[in-house]
Amino acid sequence: MPALHYAPRRRYLVRFDPKRVPHIFTDVLILGTGIAGVRAALEVDPTQRVVMITKDRVDFSNSAWAQGGIAGVLDPADDVQNHVHDTIVAGAGLCDEHVVQEVVQAAPALIRELVSYGANFDRKDGDIALTMEGGHSHPRIAHALGDATGKEVMRALIETVRGANKTEIWERTFVIDLLTHNGECKGAIVWNPEHGKSFVWAKQTILATGGAGRLFRETTNPDIATADGHALAYRAGAELRDMEMMQFHPTVLYIAGSSRHLISEAVRGEGAYLVDVTGHRFMSEYDARGELAPRDIVSRAITSQMEKTRHPCVYLDLTHLPDELIHRRFPHISQVCREFGLDLTTDRIPVRPGAHYMIGGVTVDLEGRTTLPGLWAAGEATSTGLHGANRLASNSLLEGLYYGLQAGRGASQAALGIPDDFRITPLESDWSNMNPERDDLNLVDLQNSLSAIMWRNVGIRRDEEGLAAAVSQVDFWDRYVSRREFNSTTGWELQNMLLVARLMSESARARHESRGVHYRSDFPEPDPQFTGHVTISAT
Image (tube, rainbow, N blue to C red; front, side, top):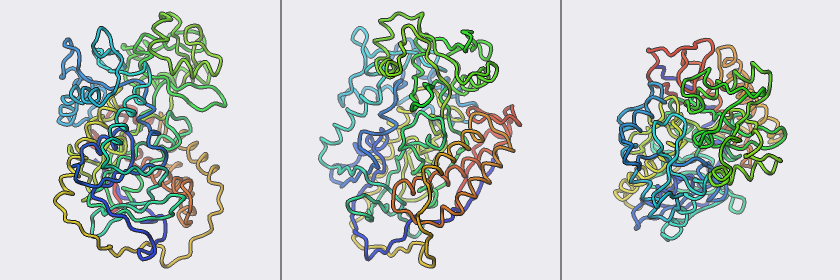
């Protein structure tokens, strides 16, 4: 498979002088406070200092937005091998079968562990209630608060971390870049409005910064999902893999002028129909599994049906389901729809696909090690081999738990073997021989333009002409944006997004086939020669 190389224009996004920047020292530095980062913190030895950094509030992450649930074999009528099989089938030939076996085998214990931390899953007859979602052969999705699983799970985990008294959580702090010396990760340079830039030196660093959905105009992700972790790991020298694999969720609430809201897969799992503007139920024409086909198939089917009907969306129809079921299972979705005058029990809900989950990311092994010594990674910022070319529904929180635990344990053990060293490593930014241009760009306009071309050219359907145009346009923007030194998160986010957009577009050009979430209209069939991974690195 292709091994691509692309050199970013800047190693560090800002200038710095180690003699003029405050220095903080810790044993383990964790970047991100979603499910992967928080679970990692719980695994660190209690004798060690842990610093966790999040660019927003500790409770604001993609994990907290997760609606559907966590997949795991808790029903005696189900079997681990069924879950393994479903994951591999959805992954379209790109899963690492050993990884799938290990993660799925661990799922029941990880879910029960969440219960021990205080997570209140929905119950039926005293047992954890389980539901179906697309691609699963058995009901195995554990959920909480009806359709707000991530919110409840993160509440329990964050309260547990805060009660541990060993972890410092720095909110509203932006990670500008990883610090490296002699080919090893040594921590990060961070910024917040109160203290400006600081160096955080760490014996071991865990990257758990989440996703990249804001690269696309239509997305379920919050504004914080700007691919920061992918970009800073890449600039530091870590290998990235399968960057062409962005999963698009089929059902995003589509109301002109409003922000986009995810309509959980569990809605279809409970029996909702997909119909077009004429009321025609169309999914059986695209796949025998109908509404419960894997997400890539449903997303493409919706796109095709929108084109056939020349209508900007399709509709979810729950009107045939019992009102009590709808209110009990989907209280959050019901509330969101009511804000727009829609009633799930009587109205069809307008939906269309949106960027949802970044399958590709920093290459890690089963223990969460990256290719950069001293750096571990977990969660949506990574490429683990679990999801292959298409993530099975509700395997994402599971992945975050498993790799958070693994990375936390591995980083802690490695840090315990490193003696305290409070010497400052001499580092130099690559801005010393130039004066950066003034920060006088309309950053909002640039980000909107970037997300528009990514949606149009690197979205659900791709071809060489569109991908080449995206690469050319992103390169043009990056040529003048990278010459500027920004002093705000908006500027740094834009620089990160431009870099990751380039990596994603180049990777999509290199895979001359269609597989899972990656669909090339000029190569519409899978190619057995492309069953491996597309890797990309800066060297």
